[in-house]
Length: 81
Image (cartoon, rainbow, N blue to C red; front, side):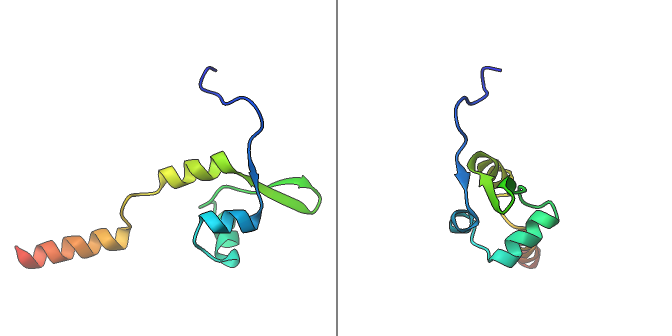
């Protein structure tokens, strides 16, 4: 339990999330629906927020290189060899 943060977790609105994650609103909503991005939490019937630490964990879980870039690099290496 020593590694658990204590205190308030920072809450972000959708606009604040979109400043951190370079996608549009519809893409963000689709990613949440497909469980590719952390879910929002409702703090009132019409107000949803995301926890900053959950977004940071998501960012850390992303691969350093996209699948497309890896495939392109491998294809290029195959052409050279």
